[in-house]
Length: 177
Image 1: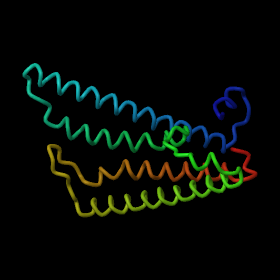
Image 2: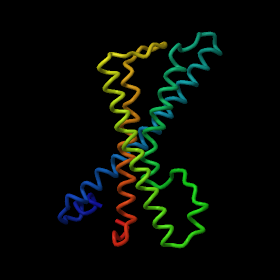
Image 3: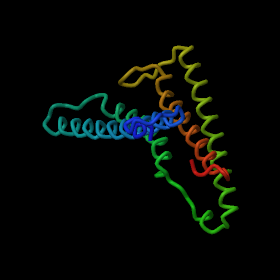
Image 4: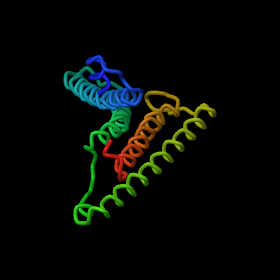
């Protein structure tokens, strides 16, 4: 919307710019997840092809595939929630009255916000401890342990923000904005 306002020569409000940047951040999450999954598929194919032609295997491919899958999952989660394409079990919600449905929606968004905020905070605490101790993960690749917490910190922070946005938008009188 901010880009459309700017293109039309209209004054662009800070709120609409924030919304525009947020939309681009969420879109980037989806793009990064897709690129990571594509890279993972190529890596697995390359590893299988090398083994089939007698060229050995890529020693780190299994481990890298595990890391890519973890990162892609965490990066995609906020994007999917933003789009409303996340998994949602709404059997109960469809069968209740509109006022109760709203209360359930608000309660769920609030609970999910708290859970994601706590997970982000705990992941940050664990990452800081691992960094302070200099902990390493020893597999084929040797990496600092705190690196593995970055995707969770990033995703849970964005998920908490998105659940807060959903909560505010669902409030009566918010007008769905």
